[in-house]
Structure formats: C-alpha cells, structure tokens
Image 1 (tube, rainbow, N blue to C red):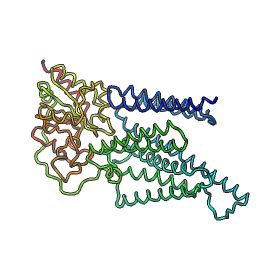
Image 2 (spheres, rainbow, N blue to C red; image 1 turned 180 degrees about the vertical axis):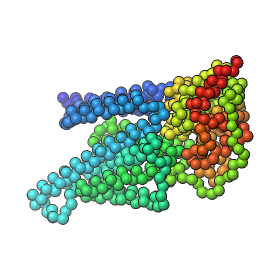
Image 3 (cartoon, rainbow, N blue to C red; image 1 turned 60 degrees about the vertical axis):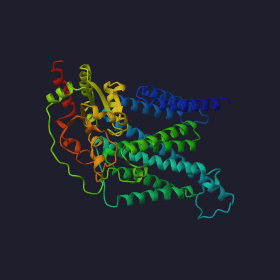
Image 4 (cartoon, rainbow, N blue to C red; image 1 turned 30 degrees about the vertical axis):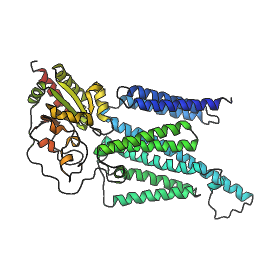
Length: 486
C-alpha cells in the first residue's frame, strides 16, 4: 500500500488545519463551542491516522490507554463544577506536559540503548574503544533528535510539576504562597544543574543515572518555581504552563517525525505565549518578571493611608437604588465563582432589564483564576454575549453609570493601582468602578484580596458595602427587587 503514507500525511494536514481553524473560532464566545468541536475532530483524525502508521507496535495497549483516558476525561468533565474549571485546566495542561516529558524519557533511554549497542559492536570489531570510553550517541547517524528530546523533556517536566502545584493551590490543598530566604538562588541552582545534565547527556554521556537525575531536577524546578506564586497570579501561571506544554509537544513531535504533534504543539505554544503576554500586560508585568520575578510579591515602600470607613447597606436599599437606575454595570470576580452566584446574579440582571434598566457586565482580563474564567461562568448562567464588555470598552462608560455592582472582585477594581506608587498593584490596569455615581460591593467580610492590601474603593464616599455570601446576597437582591412595584 504505497499510498498509505501519503494518506496519513494528508490526514495530518487536515487535522492541523482543523486545529488552527478551531483555535480561531475560540477567539469569540459566539463561536467558541464550535471551535472546540472542530479541534476535537482534528485530534480524532490525527489519532486514527497514527494507528495506521507502518511499523506501529502495541496497538492494543495504545487503544486501551486511549479508552481509559477518554473515559476519565468524559467522566470528570461532566462532573466538575464550573467554579472548579481553573484547577481542571491546570490538571489537564500538566498531563500534556507530563506526556511530552514521558515521550522524551522513552526516546532518551532508546538513544542510550542504541549507544550501548554501538559501543559493544565497536569493541567486538576492535574499533579502538578503550575501557574508559563513555557510550557515544555520536556514532549514530544524527544527533539532532537527542537535543530536541532533551529540550522537550525539560520543558514538559517543568510544565507537569508546576501545573500540579497550581492545581493543588487552586483546589485548596496547599497554602497560597510558600517563600523562604534565598529561594531565588536555590531555584537558579536547580535550573543550572538540570541544564548541566542536559548538556552532558547531549554530549555523549548517555548514562541512565544521569538521565534520571536530569528528570528529577527538571521536575523539582517546576515545583519550586510555582510554590511562591499567589492565587492572584494564577491566570498568568496557567497561561505560561500552557505555552510550555505546547512547546514540549512540538519538540517531541520533531523527535518522532510526527507532523500533527509539531503543528499542534507550535499552535498551542504560540497561542499560550500570546495569552501570557496579554495576561502580563493586564497585570502590568513584563514577561521577564513573570519568568524570573516573584509572583505576588509585595512592593516596597510605605503604602498610602486609606481614610474613612466602610459604609454598609441593606439589600432592600441596594435593590431600590438599582431598580430606579438608568445604567447598571455588574463587575464579577473570583468571589462570585466561590459562591457559585452567577445564576442568581443573572436572575437579578434580568429583573433589572425587565424594568428598563440598561445592564452590562464588566470583565477584567485577569478576573478569576484562569484566562476567561468569568466569561465561562457567565456563559454557563446564560448571560448573552452582547451584555459582556471587556475592560477597555467598559471603562469609558463608568462616569455615566448610575450604579456599579461589584460581586467578589477586589484587586481588579482597587483605585490605588493608579494612585499609590508603593502599592504592589501600582500600574496594573483596573476597571474604573470608582468613577461610577454609586458603587455597591457584595463581599463576604472585611478582608483583603489576594494581593494582601486594602481596597480604597471600599472606603470611598460613593461606595456602600453589602456584606454576605455572594449567592445569598444576590438572592436577597432578587427577592427585594421583586417586591418593588414597577
């Protein structure tokens, strides 16, 4: 069947096309669902084509692994709550990086075995090999796959262990941050040792213990790099590791000579890198700071003193204020996700709309714990896409907004980001909620956000605090609004 290789390559090309078109459709909430389906069909086509590769072995084991993986993903995907979506994304992303690292490990061990055979054959034929010679991959036709396998394994291992830590933090199994003196130097030392092992292996030292040490150090670096990261930086972390996973898959695709892996990995790596840049910009961080800085660190200097006091409001008064408003902007944050209040918030918004109030939802790029977290929750609640506005579009509208309702958002609406150079969030673009005529903040208590600083918005003259669980407070607003005569 001389036509089979051509057919397989054609399937890979079509799969790659579906990946790219699917990613393009994911850029809009209106077409994102279709984009996911397109990309899924592309992946199915690539898997089926791979089964037809000449010389493919262990098809039964591969099929069993696919069935187990698909079944586990289907079961967890159906059961996981929308509020737990960030940790599921982190977990699945880590699995992708781990798979790439595992491919690299298998290939490296294969290279070592081939070098051992080459060494033994050379000794048998009197090739001038002495007892002290190391196993040499240079005796094989091409050294390029070895270096690609090493780089892909390093990136994949870092992504795997880092994503597992991110998952544990998001799941609440680990403290938000873990820091100690000299942490950066220790992290750098671990990375240097991992790279040293990489270079040694790439330069003929294909020894099993050295390969094992290389993977241990790579996994350790991913773990240690993620430990000091706070929850407020999780959108950047998830995006960064997503890019790492894509790059690792691409490198291992070159090793295996698999076009589908190369293209899919490069697309994911490029998209993840771009998203990381956008997330970093939204938090006023450079990529260098994201890669080598201390996420969530507190800036030095004395912060500005916030004067005044938080002024509470009852749900009945808040409902009346919004019932007779002309424009209301709702700003959701992670607190809404924790309280699973998105359905009640949308119910309240629909009641306002039925009274003729113009309602919009304002989304900050890093609100929540992953890119697009708030968009996913609002879509799950049924909020129409045309009512959801991003930061750049909605900010000019706040001065003409009668009431801004903030539910669970903290640092992304804190005006000190524009007024206090000593603040750790200074320079971060924020939603200009403070410019609204009136602000109502639904908040569980008087604590600070993930950045660990007070929010000047809560003490402003035009702000009132509606204390309580997000879902309970939204439900009370619904009840009070229904009791108001139209």
